[in-house]
Length: 194
Image (cartoon, rainbow, N blue to C red; front, side, top):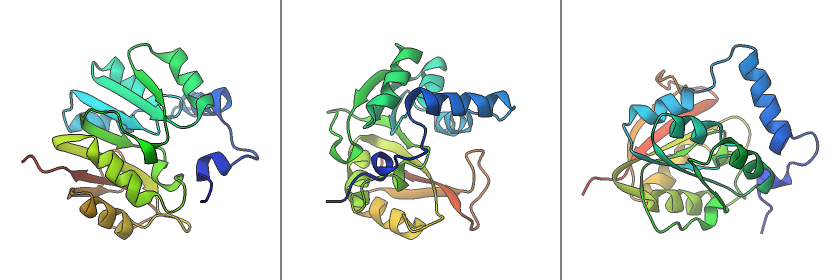
């Protein structure tokens, strides 16, 4: 089996505190860092699963806004940093391809290109695992680059359909611009309410 794309990136890829410092520098330059949290909150959840939470930027912000949040990631160095940021979030080390938390959420979000950093070939399995964690009427929100030879939007839609989800919208940005083509998408699907 292939190696996970995120774990396979070794040279020059910041992890843990280095990754967090890079994100802090972006914020210090004035870039707004909570578009993902705003988009998630637009679906009015009470509970959120942040799948591939990294150092916790999205999960911590959602918890700060009063939501019940669980963050999962397979990289222990990223979770080590996340755990220092908030006790309000439950942090779990797990590969999303093996995710089985025994509960469901109003929203499952996979931000930060999670879907293209998976182990090659696990995309359908991951989509099923994420869908299995959605409550009836729950929303799956996945933001990822379409550049390169990774996951296409068409394949993502097919994986979501196979997992029993219905399309809601495709956006070009987390701020809500409609997707009309391009190299990034925020794709939104929903589990039927009944």
